[in-house]
Length: 199
Image (cartoon, rainbow, N blue to C red; front, side):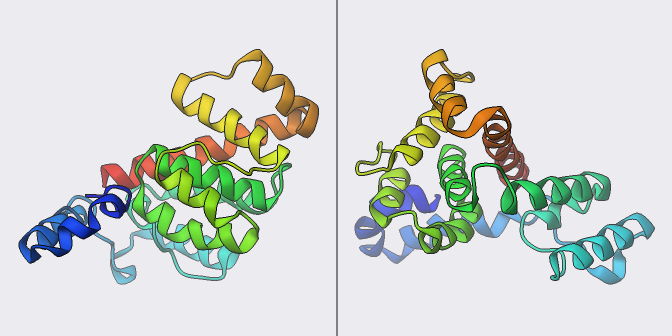
């Protein structure tokens, strides 16, 4: 059971400890597929990837990058793409966090939500907007930029394409580089969500 469904069933879960424990059973099994590789067990390619990660991110390999260490080349390329999309995209960090929340919700990805929801709130995304996204509702009270990003990202996830009207609004506001970056953020966090959900 994900945090998304747990939010709606917390009252019922508290009523029986057995139900609550069963809710966390999938989390206990999740690591069995691709358990974290201990650094002293890294092969040469993994050691190099971990060193590059530490040099760039200033922290050891963590979170979604741990299962990716089974393919250190994919991990390194993913990390590099994330370095740009997360911190330097043409739409800015606040709107980037909005895209990440929408993507985490679309993929019911607990880890992405757990990490990025506090970051999004600190960056300026209103709690009402975050709450609506986690509930699967269209938020109210969004700024024009947030509406553009929300519509674009939601259409891309739900329809697997973006309408001419939605594209034109995003292109007018963010330019073609912004549209590519916006799509890239949704795609990048979809990649991480898929890897985590699979692992």
